[in-house]
Image (tube, rainbow, N blue to C red; front, side):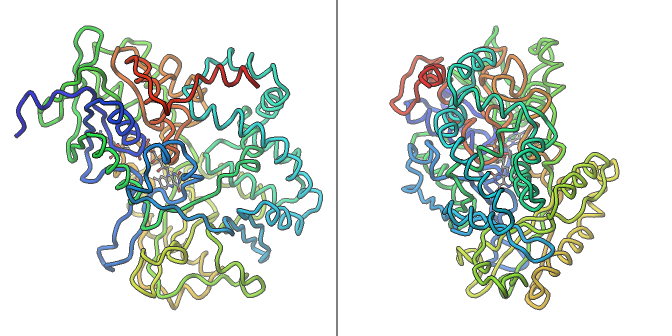
Length: 539
Ligand SMILES: Cc1cc2nc3c(=O)[nH]c(=O)nc-3n(C[C@H](O)[C@H](O)[C@H](O)COP(=O)(O)OP(=O)(O)OC[C@H]3O[C@@H](n4cnc5c(N)ncnc54)[C@H](O)[C@@H]3O)c2cc1C
């Protein structure tokens, strides 16, 4: 048992997801002594890779796998994560949509090849693709990326600054549309429309929701493509934990926070459910969701009614939950479509069952009704690119399908329905890649309820920890008053995916929170970007 004195830190972070670890490493490098408390036995949150206990040597990335443009992130470079063991792969044939008719729509790391693929469906859509990419290249570089990498601006101030430049005005104008309106207005071919909406769907934004029309144009222009971590997603967690350790930080695993300790209007520590107390001289940060942070961990009298109402009204994504089917294989999937296009053998992400926007709308309707949706699936065979994730000559592969959390009105239904959905997904996959049948060693499925059980912060199986609807974006994410990583109590901060710019493995909530805490402590570090207001003012 440590002495009482050694349990006093400069700062304490709860939940050891990647955002928390990034925050911890930056603050440690600034000279602060920081502890991170995690309930599981491993750090990294959804940077999870497990070995199948039935088939040793077969590794599965049961949560996040596709890490978009990860090695271009500022924290990846600042924390020198390659020296700590991380390495990213970015397969050239990055994404393929296989239509039921056997056609393929392809996204390459080389834009010209992507445009050629679009042209196979429609010359006019290929021209539109080029036009929007050119229009949005400077917007992504000068507005969207810097805004994601900084604490958000108050909306009226942001609008006023954007209205001063041509690029800013175009961004505001396109944003007014919903993704569905943007795609239907600009693109003609149903397969292209469906494929573009799929990418919007990966950000979990409701395709019918105005305010997000720029998402697809930004994706078309963004240079960042899907990447995977060599050795599995957990290798990034291990690299982050190593960077934390090097910065003098401590991790306390298998420890569940019970409540925040307040003195006056300041949070000064965390009491674990075991009764153990950890004190913080300067700050406590939460990498959890607003329900946990405000309603579970603060004493009733420490939370004003207005904050209680707002935290209680925080909403989770309807269409984010997913069911995963994971396979152990003797050979990689061979898609029938590859007979006429052998290049497909090296496709990274493969999308199945999505030929038309209407299928996507049907899927959304099923989520609303709590029904099992049509088999629109996407996945990969990681071992094609990284053989270290299976025994020699063997393979792993997975498919994901969006599925409602409240199946038939009750999430508990998943425990009896998960494996039958797994069978159904396997059958749909085999129709596209018939060799799976004879090469299957074993399989397992995981449901949205499994996700929530593993990560209670992903409430309702929402892997992005909070919808982008309900006004929960930018300065108002997670809710008005808490959208700048600070809370109503001094010393209490938010650093997880419920903050701007939201979920997925971007590390940016943690990166931005580090900027806010250090500014509040009057510490300047060379890596800190200038204020976003000044940068938008220069447009
Ligand atoms: C099945 C699935 C697939 C995904 N695929 C991708 C993908 O391909 N690409 C992508 O970018 N994103 C993906 N995501 C989403 C991504 O993983 C998350 O958005 C991201 O991990 C959130 O990071 P975070 O740091 O905010 O928190 P998390 O990674 O969720 O970590 C939170 C941590 O807090 C801990 N915690 C929770 N409650 C408590 C508590 N009460 N006390 C103490 N600790 C607690 C958890 O154990 C966890 O370690 C996927 C998620 C899932 C579930």
